[in-house]
Each structure stands twice: as structure tokens, then as C-alpha cells.
Amino acid sequence: MPSLIFSNMDDCTDTKDVCVWTALQQEATAYAAREVAMSSLLHATILDQDNLGGALINHLSEKLATSDFSALKMRNVLSEALDTDAGLIACVARDLEAVKDRDPACHSHLQCFLYFKGFMAIQTHRFAHALLNEGRDLVAFHLQNRSSELFGVDINPAAKIGCGVMLDHATGFVMGETATVGDDCSILQGVTLGGTGKAEEDRHPKIGDRVLIGANASVLGNIRIGDGAKIAAGSVVLKPVDDNCTVAGVPAKPVGGPCCGNPASSMDQTLEDN
Image 1 (cartoon, rainbow, N blue to C red):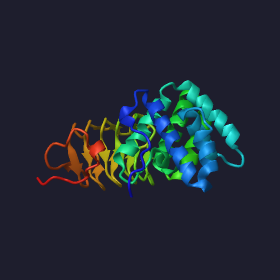
Image 2: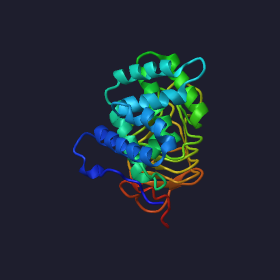
Image 3: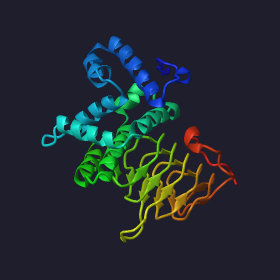
Image 4: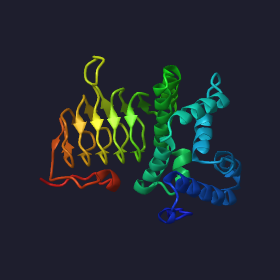
């Protein structure tokens, strides 16, 4: 299937969020003309909104709403969260661009924005994290619960996630309270960033920048995964991983030579021979 690109992001001289928003509007306009049945949805979600933040809040509010927590109430809560975190939308734009760049199944920014549950789960977490930082823990945990119900993703609101992160497929991803993920990482389905023991302390992994974590890998304990590292699918990582190192196995051990500088971008999950 050919890529459906309606704007050249490389030629955009505005900030990333404005460039991504322009691309979304252009794509929504084109699709609204060719898919009449989708026109009302596209207008309500994208074309009638003022900016990327407004569109995201409207979209997530409709998704996250329940019979006892209406879309209107949810919209107000998410708007309040956005007001407390000036950098949130910049990260949203980088996340959206990351998926468009790295996932060959993603044919437009619009496709990811509307339908990719990994993208929506991360953005729901960003709002929950902002609310938790403001002392609004109960509503933050409500968002975590709704994200788990809707997207099959469980991210504690206290966990910290950088910008430009792709959560591919997403089902079964678990991230504990004191875990962190750096910038420009790619994480596949079934990954656990978990703790060991039950002590109330810093007990979860610290993932560096540009890290690729393969499907169903488990990283356990307060250990650091270095920048540019690659963790093979199905691995169980119990010890720290050096920068640019590839690990595989149960328990995981270094394999092959040094990893490339940005495995998260290349999405190359093969292992070199020893």
C-alpha cells in the first residue's frame, strides 16, 4: 500500500507541533473529500479544532469517557492537565512523527492519531502524569485504569516517558511506578518494565535514549539500560546494559558486536552472529 503523504515535513519551518498539525489538517481534508462517510468524524476531530492540543483533547475525551465521567468532564480535566505542562504537546508531536517515520504500517499521521492505540495510550499517560504532578492522584489513576481497559496498556501515572517514543502494537505493555523511558525509544508489544520485591523504593528500570525493546521482553529491577541499546524479543533483563549494547536471552546477555547508534529508529531486530 503506498504511503499517503499530503505535506512535506522536511520543508516545514514551523515548530514540530505546528508542522504535525498542518500535516494532520491536510490529510483530514483530503480524506474527508474521498471518504464521505468519514467526513463528520474528521471535521469534529481535526478540521473543526484550533490546534494539535485541542484535537488531541477532543479525541481522547470521546475515547476515555464513561457513563459516570462524561466526555465534557473529561475534556475539562485534560485541558486543565495541559495547562500545567507546557512541553506536553511538543512531545505529542514528536511521538506522532516517530510512529510515522518508523512504522511501515503507518501510512499517514492521521491514521496513527485516530487509531493507533500505542500512541493514544502514551498520550493518556502524559495527561495522567501531569495531573499526578498537580496532586490530583485519583483522576490520574482513573485515566490509567481507562487506558488499561481500552488499550491493553498499563502505565503507572508516576512513570516518566520522554519524547519521540513509539509504542508499537502496544498490547500488554506494563510500566511500573518508578520506571523511566528516555527520548526516541521504540517499544513493542508485551514489554514489561517491572520491579523486583515490594519495598516502596526506586525499584524499576531506567531506559536511556534511542533504545529498542523487542516484543515480550521483560526488564526488571532498578537497572539502567544504556543509550542506543537493543533488547531482543523475549529476553529477561536483570542486569544493567551498556550504551550501544545488544542483549538477548533468559537471562539476557550481550550478543554480537556493538549496536548501531539508533536501533529505535532503524527498528532492526535481527542479531549479528558472534
